[in-house]
Image (cartoon, rainbow, N blue to C red; front, top):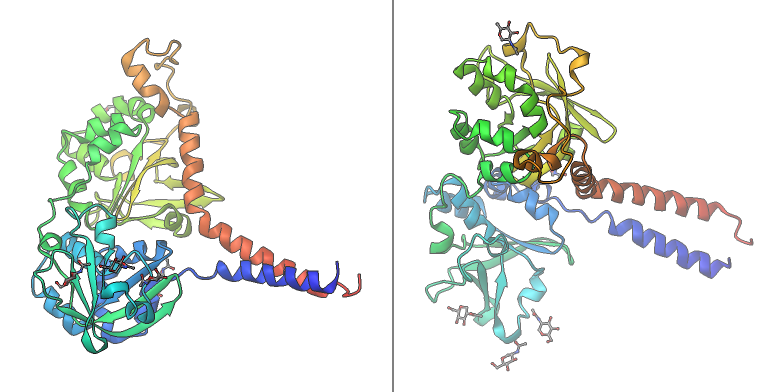
Length: 408
Ligand SMILES: *[C@@H]1O[C@H](CO)[C@@H](O)[C@H](O)[C@H]1NC(C)=O
Ligand SMILES: *[C@@H]1O[C@H](CO)[C@@H](O)[C@H](O)[C@H]1NC(C)=O
Ligand SMILES: *[C@@H]1O[C@H](CO)[C@@H](O)[C@H](O)[C@H]1NC(C)=O
Ligand SMILES: *[C@@H]1O[C@H](CO)[C@@H](O)[C@H](O)[C@H]1NC(C)=O
Ligand SMILES: *[C@@H]1O[C@H](CO)[C@@H](O)[C@H](O)[C@H]1NC(C)=O
């Protein structure tokens, strides 16, 4: 190829490489500014930081520690505070320049509060209005006719990915500050039942362990839900446990932090569970081999075979075995012969022949269903890894080309 083609090709490749490096991190952007440390802290605490980083075109309206302190004086619960703060994240790009050039001087912009569906009607829209003397005012759409908050300065702009602007006061609205439905809109039992963990959900529903799961959803919760066939095979052992031990066993399947699949893969090590208390460690070890994540107790090892729901701060994975904590089964050594599931359960021969079997079937073993699910999970979680690999590839390729003799 001639030199011009080579040059254009290189240009194209480096452009492709740079577009992959635009991933932003709001925590890091604000960390350089101590006057926004409280705002930054609460973005992390409410898990809004993760949602901001995942979005491509976004404007964050940051408020300084003094303004944040006024907001905190309202003593809102964390989920309510999350609603208020999500009003400060606009799902469109507004650099300082665009802000001052709003057509007809006023506009309504959708915020993350609107985008997540938590707002009633249009309560999640933010009114931006250009005022006299270059002032720009902000208010929630359902404002009382006054603009309480004003543009102060631009903190960082990466057109058209993320813009971080300072505004003078918190934007708020009656709707955003309304107490959120306690404890959470997420119905753990119904999600598990619908997604192939019915047997485990049936154990959890009447159990004293359930409130503990629900209480943790808002603050961060990861549930490892054994498949129906795993729970059915475990039934004789479960029946043998005392009531208190049953509660501990169920709690053992919850971890009181949000753990993304990517996070699990990179954090090989001990995880405490909802059952962990003082000397009763009830922990297990996460082990990754390639794309496979397994959970290793002192008694047995289970593998993650799919994701039921991943809505930061709540995530639930399907696993192929009931986790057996050493605290309850220290004398049990899981015989290798036990792995092939007890033949008690017949393979469903005719579809719908038996309703419980039919309901069970898609959840069993490595069915197409869970394999698809797994592939889908890896797809959504592997995007950044793919981008990284692509970036490295294009860089290497550009280098290679650059070293080729120019007169080929
Ligand atoms: C963002 O930056 C913070 C602080 O440097 C770091 O703890 C966090 O892991 C980063 N998040 C991502 C998604 O890279
Ligand atoms: C204003 O309108 C012009 C032309 O319709 C458009 O190009 C521009 O992006 C608009 N500005 C804003 C802030 O929406
Ligand atoms: C500005 O306002 C006028 C009259 O209210 C309207 O006709 C026009 O469409 C508006 N322009 C934009 C860009 O919103
Ligand atoms: C925004 O609020 C101001 C002041 O209440 C109001 O005059 C203006 O019409 C509002 N803008 C929009 C687009 O609703
Ligand atoms: C139930 O407990 C008894 C007494 O501890 C034990 O002998 C038996 O093996 C247990 N059964 C199962 C299925 O674990």
